[in-house]
Length: 259
Image (cartoon, rainbow, N blue to C red):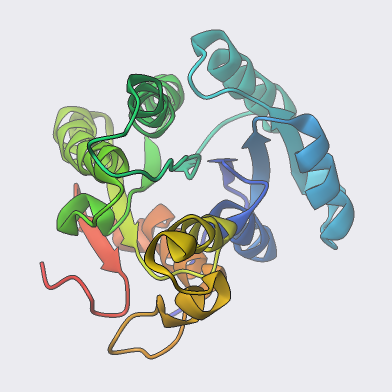
């Protein structure tokens, strides 16, 4: 079965690295118009310079997903450039590791602001476009942390659990407007975020960061998951072939999470 999203226009937040960047490559290769969004324009410019992509079908827009005006400008830019919107990938996210005793209020707030509020603001702004047209699809990048709850990241765990709940709520509310909302829950993916977690945790437990990182793999798979593997599932969820998958939080962690 081949997934067809050719000619669609998709916004990707957090597109300068990790899963967001991989998703941009996959979607572009499948014939979509891609709008890359990230906090700093220079990071987006570097991605665009590094990737061998057809520039007529891809643009980069700096955007703070926690600022409503930024999000509205992002959507307006995408519509002005490509005429309409068909999909959104909410991949922007932050993690600040610490034990629950020492997690600062500021770190807690920032993780909820980016991971939850940012996802909501982007989803609503894009869904308003969908509502006035023929509908569309949203894929939220949550995490298996939102289901399992790992140590030293209580705030992050809680924020991703909130994204999963938000996904289900928006799917239910917006289904009458032909808007399909799902989430993916990756784990053990070879991204800068995972490497940063190992850098923080390694010294705390007396293990070299590189050694710790090499062990942070899905048990059944025995290796790190590649960002492009997650991106391909995201692409499917954006397609009309996924029409019967609604409000789901799909585990992409090599079998580590059983529910």
